[in-house]
Image (cartoon, rainbow, N blue to C red; front, side, top):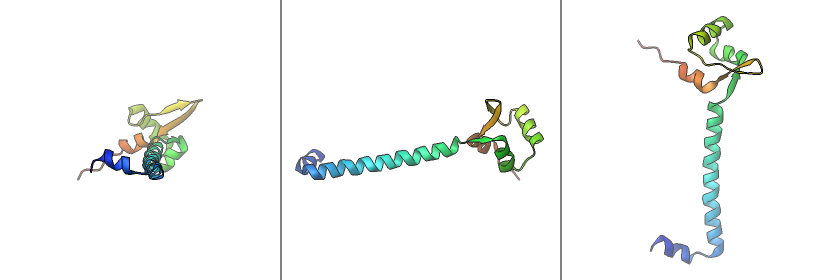
Amino acid sequence: MTKATLLQNLSPEDLTDLIGNVFDAKLKDFQTHQNTQTAKDELLSREQVLELLQINSSTLWHWQNKGKITVYKFANKCYYKRSELMESITPLKK
């Protein structure tokens, strides 16, 4: 039996349920992806970065000047992307 034949044999209620289930599954996948992207692109304040990386402000300033960390400014405040901070961390090779 082909897909077209199966669809023709469905009642309108069954077809509505099938479409609803597919839509719900796709919406859930989309929301999960969006939540993951939002967490990755989360902006952190300077104080949050200092606490997260457990460094002092002069170290952060040096890293910014050397280009190791990208800083974004808005209304005279500094922000950092969590994803970029995590990408800048490299494993120690022994």
